[in-house]
Length: 490
Image 1 (cartoon, rainbow, N blue to C red):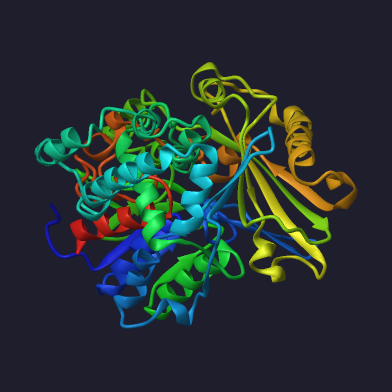
Image 2: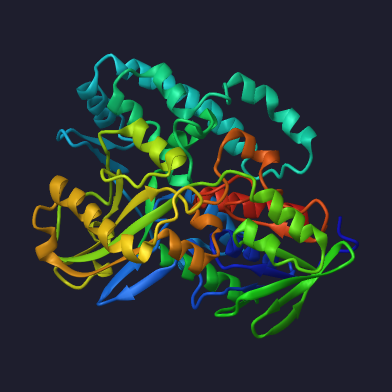
């Protein structure tokens, strides 16, 4: 525990988790400095302004707005003063190669009709699944989402609920218990991919995402996810916080079993505590003068990590009646997941998440044009380390072929600007171990107490926030981790 109340803090990394923690600490009167390696804040929520288009790096699905609004409420202000959120409906359009489309939303009448079109018998099964999802949402998100798991006893307290909801089963297995349509099983289980989890392995507790979306809706920040990041920075700076950009941290300094600050490319900064929003393996690698650094890094490298992503950003001439979010499923749901998570095979028939922000906010592209990105989960570099300088341009064409076939036949004729982002970029730009896009894989044995603790077990004023710590990836997850970590500090 800290010897005295902290007066100063350093947060490494200006991603969602780092900014949320910094806002909480600054609101509590702790003078906080955020140190960011890149030229602008956001972390994985980076942004490119290119040829008149605004391209968000992601994430782009905003759920549970109250978890964000709470950050502004700490100082008596309102998020709406800095950020405008717009509802997205349908949440997603799910599409298969045989021409079947399924609009997924919280419109009960429309949703039940869509389910009945797939399999009339599954309407009743869906309602039973929804009841299950409500239960795990209460236990896993409401009760435990912002509670740190520092000791094993805290895990034991949660065990009865985990047993009740069969947490050892996978999301796909649990969904299959309730519905029979193969397409509906995919529709109700794919969400774990948005936080780096394999639906075939990730704990059934992650069914809570369905309840989270159903109750709170799916939203988009006007101007892009980067506009939400910029709003958080404005709030933090109004509170008196400091953000240092283009200043990579080279070392976390220690004295005894305490951290004393950081050494950056521009000098030394001292503080009463340090919290890292960076990649957890990279963060431990920054501890060079204490054995905890080597031990922590070596231990984490033995864990399993989430896949990486291949993302194609493109701007097209023309406008399109394509929903904000689409999922283009491969015909090989289970086998494709096995290729990504186990076999290390780069699929020629990838499933894609297609983001089309200009259907909600036309200002993200020049007049009469549209912005998109297409995201394909791919194996991380520990499973498959190809030369992405060579493979990237080729795989970009594979992605475009999928969109051409299912949605935009003349896509190549309409392209005004295009670029891609690879697992190598996740490593180079974000320090992501193995190029993983979501840090540790969210399996049961790497969740809660078994995930990186929100406070280090040895260096008692070193903290963690973000995807690698409890509760995990996704905007609600990393914002929840900030609340858990701040609760240990304040």
